[in-house]
Image (cartoon, rainbow, N blue to C red; front, side, top):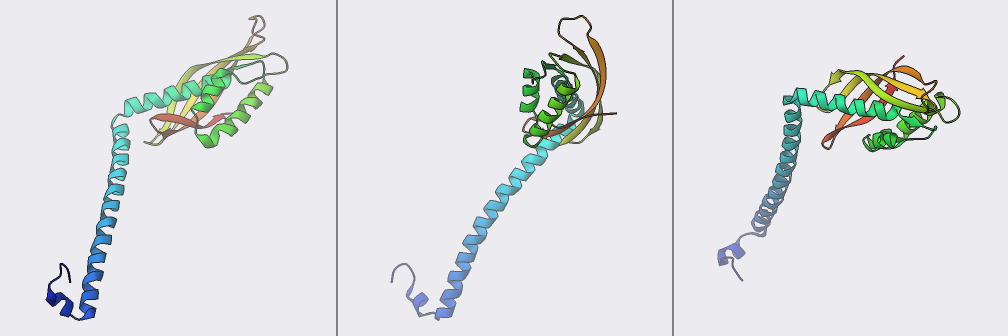
Length: 182
């Protein structure tokens, strides 16, 4: 009869079943508790990382503005009506859902430059934060692009105003929207 005392086997079957159910319930409860503690720890870590970003607002602000500056320059730098390495860098630093939209916007911008071998070299004149939260930022960018044939003569300077919307992903700001402001 094993490890149980003889009196155990004499107990009514309903009592033995009740003890077995209680033991199983305690085991399942322990498993669920350990899973919920693990989830709770992950949630606390996520909130702690967000709080650390909020506690460093100057650094967070500067990182958002730098990311928007890079995005604007990459978007406005086009050569020969094709995408440039700058644009590919922008696409690699954007959120997965926004890549196709940004690619289409860049193609429209290249078409707007005019036919032929137009070249556009973008630069940022000024940038400022419109809004900032631990996970999202919007930056207004005043940019200019020198548009021409690439030979220097007859180049035209064009001014642009853009808003760059960013989301915090991983350990960096990623572009999820870039729009011209009229």
